[in-house]
Image 1 (cartoon, rainbow, N blue to C red):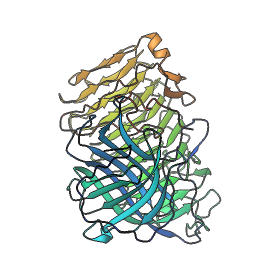
Image 2: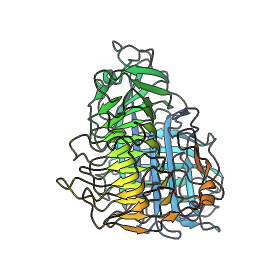
Image 3: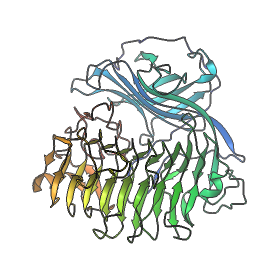
Length: 545
């Protein structure tokens, strides 16, 4: 890979030709200031009717190398829609800088100079052109330069089949090209409609931009696989909302606050304790602010859900399970991800052992890049059917009884092959990282490169798992760790310039797990910025605006 004027070309499948172009912009998480919401998108088109758009998403790799400088490995993560929304992250581990870092290209809402500039529905790079798409844009290299680029993708088969195709071309003067069949991951093309919800809407309306509806339950009645429900900023006070529509692996259903934390959902407690419950599969819930009168917040009770970038806070009492509860109560729901959320003040601190910040009760869950503070019992808890989890790069502080608790109901399963890595667990009321002897855990759990401090019953207490690279802080090291530690959601948990967490993380996972760390941080900063991953939810580097 050359980012400085040379050319390198990988294997190419067909050529590609431009089709119909549409202007496009961004859909990435913005900079994160706890005091104010941020944009997910620069705006929505003024459609008078429900509109449908093609969308391509992809997360995967080219090449057979490992995630180490100099390896033949390229990574990509993109989500681009033909409706003025999109993001892209690309990294080539073969492009090694003089400081040991590697080359990246990013389109992100935190950088207004970057953008997706065209979208073409179809691609001659694919044997069946209708299974592909192409998009152009202006991205920023890791060295700071802005460059033009074109991406062509083909959705040729199921995830992991090795039949999907990805190509990226960086325009002159850089003349970089890389393409090939995926070595891991998936490319998905789908077509979805955009529906709209507003605090001033009415559920008698058709949920269009010009005539939005008011509740989540109403818009869910109109959603189909591939559709997105946009929620305008403002205050929504609802009885518990229950939604059940499912997407598919290639056409997810999305509920999204168009302004991050701008759609503020307040549960009334009428009709159930939770603010909302989703029972559909392949559903994304993105960017909401949630609070209510009891200690249940967002209930995720489908398979393959993604809970992304929400703020769930100030849920009092002892009558709930968690701020974010995954799988209550089948304990078999699989593949759910809880990513980049802020969870604070859940339940009465230390009073009950059954109210948690984030609670994972099913198998194959992912909990990454979250900040969890002031939970009654555990900030992150796992039990019942939990096994083969990934819990990485979270900040966990001021938890009532446990920072991170790993366990399972012995009548259901053994919590084994779980990875707990790159987390910061500090100032708990009892245990830090706790592998409970009261459930059933296996010998293949790994606890790698976690930072712990001031957890009086034990910073890390294991029964079966293996610990490696734990950093137990001194008082001085803790004082230098964050920009502004408060132990609640008023703090700033970016790493300080002298933090011991910088470049101290790992990419090592439990046996049989190929990837267990996020490609980006809580604020969208790409990982790693230095010679290795940082520990915690943020990656040290220039602060997002």
